[in-house]
Length: 275
Image: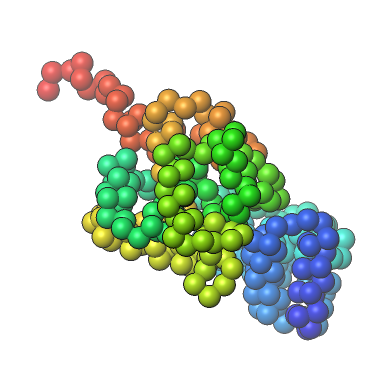
């Protein structure tokens, strides 16, 4: 089977339909693994049982769902064979709540952050709830000081949105610009025009370790921290949905489930019992 040929066709068709670079990368990776595991001379000859067998070998439900989506899209847009998945329903998604940091723990990360670029990274992630792709693709021209907003261009789902520009962030950005003089993107890389997602992750891990955070710290967690703390501060969930760029408010409601402050304020029925 000529996997590279089918991979190229898949990428071309996804690009034509306006899929984001991240979606194309993830779907293509899933497709390559799938085609390499199936001993057939052409994708059209792969049957329903072959697909089910491959999916059943995925240990985690969410991993299986990712492969399911990629393979289904491939057959839909490249071969118009939706019927292959007529009797292959999605497995149920895992419902795991992310572990978030408290406001005090986030403050400790800021307290130990002495590198100005790292402070900008931490500030933008936490202040606006940015995804890492949105952070590294942020340009100076996207920051509108007149209206106190940051324009997020071509985000997940190829959608644009606006988030607030905190007044506290402006002097930090000014100092950073004077020192680093980045031209196009806010975060320039050491050897390239843009900072990398891997470098952002290393910054988060290092700050978490220096602040003695007893939890795993990673980039996307800052987005969870941001919106959870907004919920705790009484920000309307529908506004948070718009800031997060969620299509459905049900996705945003997860932050009401992981808010430790809200849960800790609930009075247990045991408080009315003498034990």
